[in-house]
Amino acid sequence: MVTTTIWITGSEGRLGSAITDLLKKDKKYRIVTTGKDVDISDAAAVEKAIDNYRPTVVINAASISDAAYCEDHPLEAYKVNALGARNLAVASRRKNAVIIHLSTDGVFSGEHNRPKNEFDVPTPKSVYGKSMYAGENLVRELNPKHLIIRTSWLYGFKKKHEDEPDNYYDRVVALGKRGEKFTAPIDVIGTPTSARELAKFVSVILNTEEYGIYHASCEGACTRYGYARMILEVNGLDTTLVTESFQEANGLMVSTQLENMMMKLTGLYQMPPWADEIRSYAASMKDMK
Image 1 (cartoon, one colour):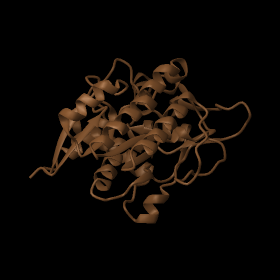
Image 2 (tube, rainbow, N blue to C red; image 1 turned 180 degrees about the vertical axis):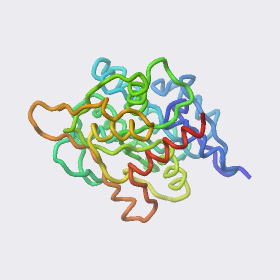
Image 3 (cartoon, rainbow, N blue to C red; image 1 turned 30 degrees about the horizontal axis):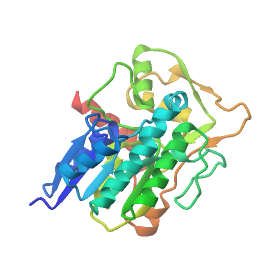
Image 4 (tube, rainbow, N blue to C red; image 1 turned 60 degrees about the horizontal axis):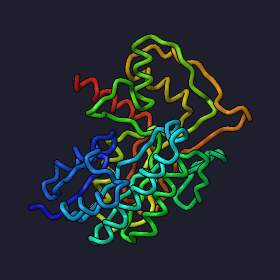
């Protein structure tokens, strides 16, 4: 019997696809998905959609996540990442629905080489980070029944592929298959996290009465260079194609590693080590071929 109707925005994206595929397996959920057919930055379109779908939970996986694009198009970034989040928060509150808003480690500046937990105050520097943090704040202010889930360095299978790979994992694989040499910084630290593992956490937290902010990245951390080498390795590609570089001219590390402190405090879930998950993901992708 269906007990919960869930509206997933951004369902064509990497994370939206993973969440949709996982939740559709549970017969107690009625899943409604939208992509570009519902412009979340259009308040009237959001209100019309929520009246039609009548969800008890809204999962917002829609965002503009290309940091370089956001820098060049700040108005568009804020329109989707902030205004869109606001519209969904307002509409979901009107229906007394829970909103689960997916966010990013990009809300942190990267200063101070230590993991950031849910009690650290974000100080974003990029347009992407600022627009996503604005969206978080609007969700918090406008719907008390909210969950904000931050993750980092997301990768995963995407059903609709563009001509060019749109995330780091896929770009490295493409370079490796072409035998192209490239560089990756050793002064940028974070945690690769698979969309499928994040989707599992979302499915777990759906069955609780938790609200607030949760960090949900795989455990551990690596440099961007270490990540690139691991991607090449698990895909059977030449690891010598990547060489070390530096991103920062000032010699300081940039670290947006997240600590899943709320998971540890509540005992709600345990994310796997990032290296174990990337090996498992690569193996599953080979099985699909």
